[in-house]
Image (cartoon, rainbow, N blue to C red; front, side, top):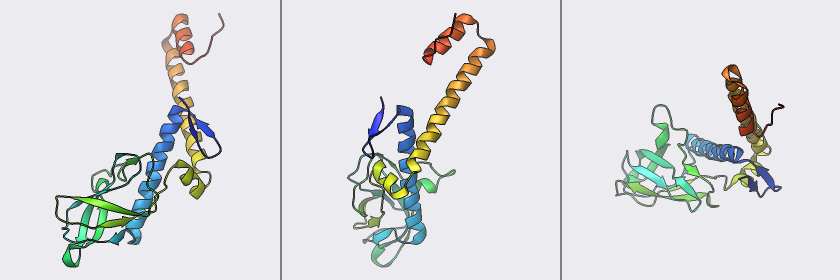
Length: 187
């Protein structure tokens, strides 16, 4: 079923929508990595944390998997002074290191939970794209490129399936393959 995005009532196929959501999560993961690199991700270090603690982002947006961070350094009273995305410490780094979200809360500051228990009060500053239209507005045109790419990928998959069928198929098999794609072959 097609998805319609609010920005210009733009409709995409299910496959394109999956690509748009992947792009949304990749773009937000890139924002997290940029904030870590710039040293601006920690709004408040809290107290009682230890190196190796795992912080989970608290976000009122819609999520399948929340972003998690490994604490890499602490200061006085156990205040967090450095983090890395947990998915970035694996080999290879996880493509969903920044979590799997459909929307993010509008706030720039995000509370965290910690495992194992102990620390409290760490707040991370990440200026997420709140939803797909927000991502488009902030990056003008990026969504069009993603959808065009996924549409082309879908066309290539259809072409490959037809080519494979043509190589060894009889007339009935060719007709069945074409029919699966909504194509009627002449008799």
